[in-house]
Image (cartoon, rainbow, N blue to C red; front, side):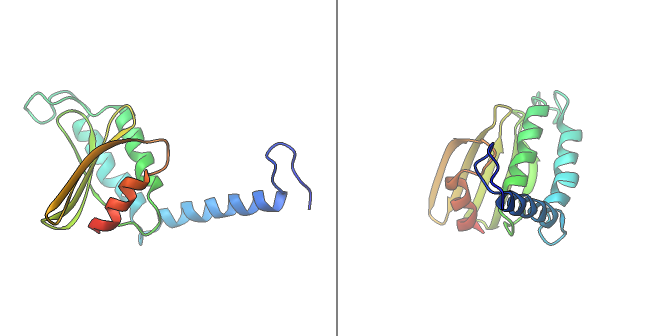
Length: 150
């Protein structure tokens, strides 16, 4: 087993890491997990319908390419088996993802063009909200909220 000098890992470890990433991408594309369906369906529809100013007839801002791109990355970063959210747009130009099975158990995460994730959750009698930066991985706070709601 040869050791590569650029990454500090063996060829076998690199091969396994790449194969696991390939398998993960294939699972994300499967209908069981539904993420690829959401990206090509609902997210694409939101982009098409809301990328022009005043898309709602009430002076809304357009959904920008950056917001769309971060939203797509956000969806692809969800762990396998995560409940699939519904997708929408907000008048401020952000893309929003909503989870919830009951009126008092809901989570909304909005993705800004800057890559910020703004969230608000109802958890029974309690509620919480905040903002987390998105750097390609779902922040633990938001993952925890998704699990609580779903």
